[in-house]
Image (cartoon, rainbow, N blue to C red):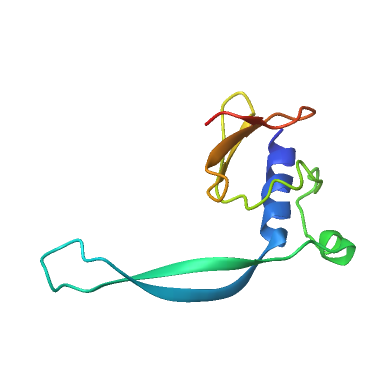
Length: 108
């Protein structure tokens, strides 16, 4: 499972590329008149090419493979003790639970 988890993170890293950071002015949280500037990172969607996948350098005994695909705007991942991968999708406002060999289920 550790090898598959590493592969999942490697594949996720390949699908995200650096695009740009933008600044937004938000309503002040502190005292009136205080300006708060936020920086947001919006990665550019990039699908991994076969050449990128074959160029990964992995330790002996590890392999890169697709764990899940087409999850639309995945943001953060966490792995539970039972091996389930929890994935946030802010645009959809939900959290998915992914188990190997099963379709993702919405948990929140």
